[in-house]
Length: 422
Image 1 (cartoon, rainbow, N blue to C red):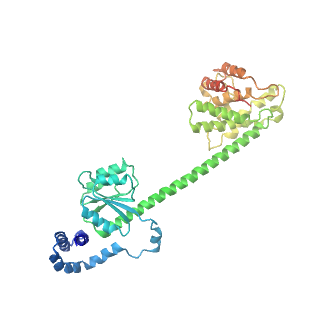
Image 2: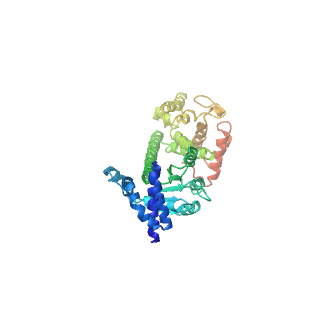
Image 3: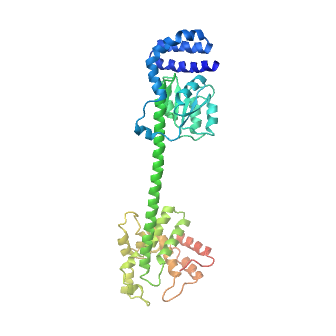
């Protein structure tokens, strides 16, 4: 019998809240009297007053019943219902409030109840509900303390938290929103309001998670497309560089090797991955201007005439003119135009020196000279490694930037078996 009166007390407590929230104080007082009678086991009072009180509540009960048991759901709304029941954690030091909240919510959701902030945090260390209804004023840890630990210590920023409070204070609400609460539900609970707010916030949470999932999905697709385009671009540039190298039967693979040496120098110099990628592309295309040089000049086995050498010296400017309008990689023509400039001056086509030579061109210049010495020519084989090392050392500060020449020398030193050549 005791359990029956406990359930009856829960029901009339809920009925007491509804008229109070709309100003029907006398009806709320009648329900409160029935609640106290249930608490005290005053069966006689309940039998005398229950029917009259219920008659007064009949209209309101119909509305509450609709909220508790649900109305017909439109087809489009039904399609949005989650396949798995959502889980709500209710935290309140008033056990009566816990029972009422559970009774109101359990027809639509899985409900867990704990009576303190400490127990809520212990619960959340092993289980992650879809929503938390959190009492604002509790002994020990209050709602603000609990919410702070939920967000910061447990890292559960995605779980929507609704504060439960008797307060009607604007500052409290502002602080609650600042701390990360998504809404407030006033006590005593009004069934329809609680259900509507919980439903709305869960729908918003689902929408946010779905949106985040879609963003991640589309971002992944965009990244995959970008990677495919980068691979396609690299392959296209590589094919172009091979076409350029094919003009000279003695420089097969020259541009790709210069690109790889340049990228390694940039890496050792501490440049970013983006900068390393940029210089790799510049290295692949540094000789693109040779397209404009006749094959007979490029492949001439003997010494070039002054006129023929003048044609060769035009290829940096020709390459720059070809590359300068590529908007996706501004500056890609630097390596083509200035890789034959000298750090100490006297190079071509512009005769600039030192720091005036763009940094990428200074790197490519060292790599280009190294590959020229370590590749076969019509008039000689690959030079011995000690000869190459000596030539790089002699060119420090005159032909080559000292910093990048020294890195090249470190690479030569590391190439113990002399595998870094054509």
